[in-house]
Length: 246
Image 1 (cartoon, rainbow, N blue to C red):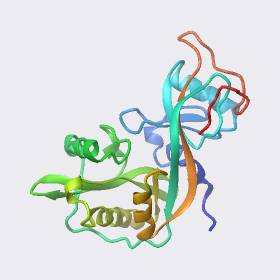
Image 2 (image 1 turned 180 degrees about the vertical axis):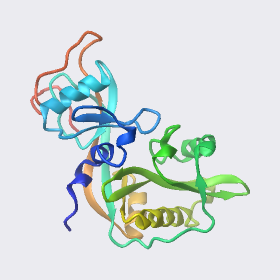
Image 3 (image 1 turned 45 degrees about the horizontal axis):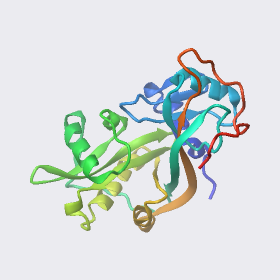
Image 4 (image 1 turned 90 degrees about the horizontal axis):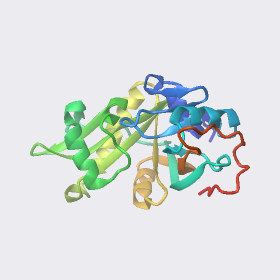
């Protein structure tokens, strides 16, 4: 299956494209505001100039997260990370969920409570601004949700899929994924998903409803070199001996 290259660098494709209005950017490096989505991106991880731009963007001795990077320049420290997967829609049945309600900024405190109980992945106080978020309530209480996060040319990521543990097994997450996908399809775009590679249960669910595993990705937590008076490193990615690619 041949798919567009932006999927290989989805965070950059979003920040350089449909989400450019969120981007904090220096040259070939960009990031979302920390209260929206705490990730940085490079136009080309093999380009030393992009790493210099990233250093200028985030500053010295700063910790941040980035996806799709397997090696880093000399002096940049890998302090954590993991593996993820990217899945794309190849046969999803998208349809509205009549019981779902639109969630907005006023719902953020309740959204954050649900996220704390279910841990679907990073969600910040302004993440809800990235796209459409839908929820299902029971007796007024938010018990399940899903929404849109990364938006890149031709594609939108479905994210924050979660259900209160007391209400699992009722198909709520599937109904919400299909409903969010219906809105994405109405714009002429296709849905995609990212998940932790360790979350095999979620991956099986997504595959069972029409998503296909496209690629595995690396998620790194890095710290920039230097002190408050430091300078950007000059070495190209992959030349260091101290980095610990995951």
